[in-house]
Image 1 (cartoon, one colour):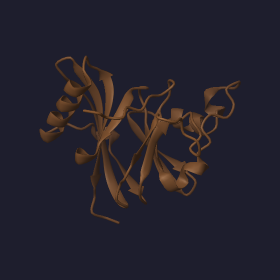
Image 2 (image 1 turned 180 degrees about the vertical axis):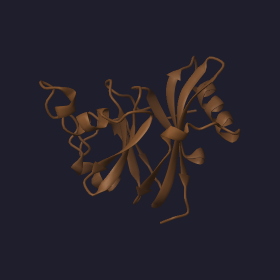
Image 3 (image 1 turned 30 degrees about the horizontal axis):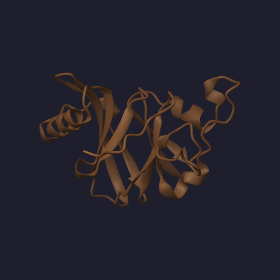
Length: 171
């Protein structure tokens, strides 16, 4: 499987509305405490696997907890975050299998996200107007409201954080 995996320099990844990318500044000032590092500091303040953060007049989805390599499986509307695995294909197959089963999603990680169209997955330390070449992924989401669910799962030697988007049926 030829998937694009997005990496982080050590902080959270961000799924930002493509139309609001210019409003995301990334890291501003690393000579001060992390909470003063501009937008990146705000993303670092998100506790847990996911959280929403203001980007202009819209919201972005922060993929926090670990700086894990992450890809997106469009057919399952699923972010797969690589915690541990020997092989990419085995990890992706395991993630797909887990999602087809009755996954016990972490109730404390559930939220609702309003999306106006395509979004971009990238390292939150980068400025949105200029994400790192080859290290960002455009995801064509339909406008609407999505229930975001997340959980950590292990299957054999494959360990992953799964973040799924489910349309709620509301505009």
